[in-house]
Length: 157
Image (tube, rainbow, N blue to C red):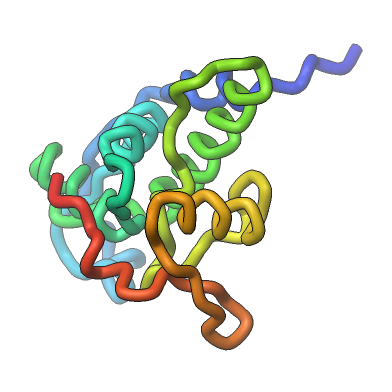
């Protein structure tokens, strides 16, 4: 008998014993340096994304730095932070589809260099529309799309 597929909300609320801070192993150290890495919980990433006000932006790097500081770690895990931001975005879209008005403003969370994340709900077209409604200008850069002067709109957490 097949198990029912988890909703995005269920995935968001499945903490998997996270957050946890672990030592950076010698295998990870060429890429991440020395020290410790915080593996955040999905809800922590969502909560950080929720704190970005209208007209402001954040990148995955800023979320990672914020979570590392919160947990006294050297870095925030780039892999899980990115995955959990994606889960939070889909959970927010799921909430919006169910009629919830105040959802996590995932469109304000950008990739490195101010790039829009094409894997977020609605894709580039929806993200561009939402960001432009908040006063940002989205421009093409190669095959990607970025928010013009994104770094001037970063939120300080």
